[in-house]
Image: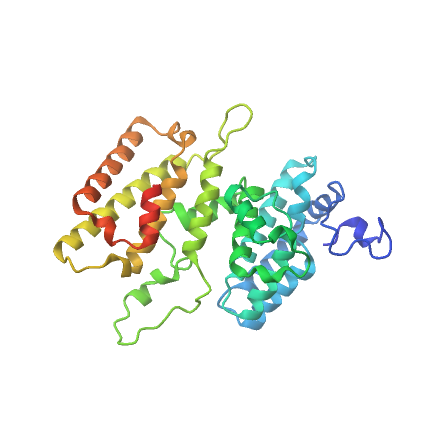
Amino acid sequence: LEPAHSRNGGGGGGGGGGDDDDGGDGGGGIGVLCEHRAMLAEWLELVRAHACIAESPESRTAAVESIVCARALRFSLAACGTPPLPNADAAEETDELLASLWIIAIRLIQDDDEDVRSCITRHVSDLLAGDTRHVPGALEGAAKGSGMGRLHASACEIGSGPALRLSLSHLAHRFSHTAAFEAVLCGYLFSPDIDPRLFPSLDPELLNDQRMFPRELDNFWEEPLEVVEALSVHAREWAGREDAAGVNPVTSSAPRWLTAAAQSLASLVADGAQRYAEDTSLVLSYDVVFTTRAVRACRALWALSVPTVARLLSRDEQSNVCAHLHSMASTLSLSRLELLFHPLVEHSLAQA
């Protein structure tokens, strides 16, 4: 998957391609990738299968090594400044494939095997740490303040946490138009049904385990609420974006997602108030299920509470959202329930 001029050894001579070549050949690299997208799709399925958490560490290590050797992730950086490709359908299909590859990399950054995690973190860091053009606002300041902008090819010191946030930022800003990115948003933020594969602490087997020493989480490096928090920032920017003509490209599902988030949060707050009224010794901050669901609903509501989405709401949807917000405000003011919330929930409620 090397860019064409790098394979031919052209340009600077004496190994001029190397790691400094991000496929930036005026669109030639990404163009070559479009031409071979069938091969890319076949390879991606192999990587996806071997990167599955159910596979052995050796299999997941092989998936990471394949990603690193293929150098495919860098093509998404190369395409940022290139002119549109003549074949729009091919470009769209290639973007979907690259977005899916970045999603696999993001999951591997949270892998419980140290070799897998450190290898993909190092690779992603090498690609993104010195390139803050896709990192907005506060995150850009954090990147510069922590020295990320000065890191070079030995940049693995930034660790998996910053690498995860940089990868999510790149995914949001480079691939916000793809179905793959929308599926990630839906899974982590907007879907009413929470997938326990994304939120292992909500796995029914764990929740229903009544043994004295219940089984612990399999992977302590998986931080779904950190992903929720980071994605909500990008989702809010995505939902509030307008083009030069004042048209918002946000999905038509946004009004339904906003209504569902308001309803879910109002239901959680009412349930928490009722449980506390029955037992004033109850400390909700220790309730993992409540905290996870509440933070997720808060962040989803905040992400979609922008004028561009509000304009898409029907009159009935506007009334429903307002009723849910008033209900929450009334419940919280009467019961002082927010004083018992986990700090994550308090912060998220304040924003929502």
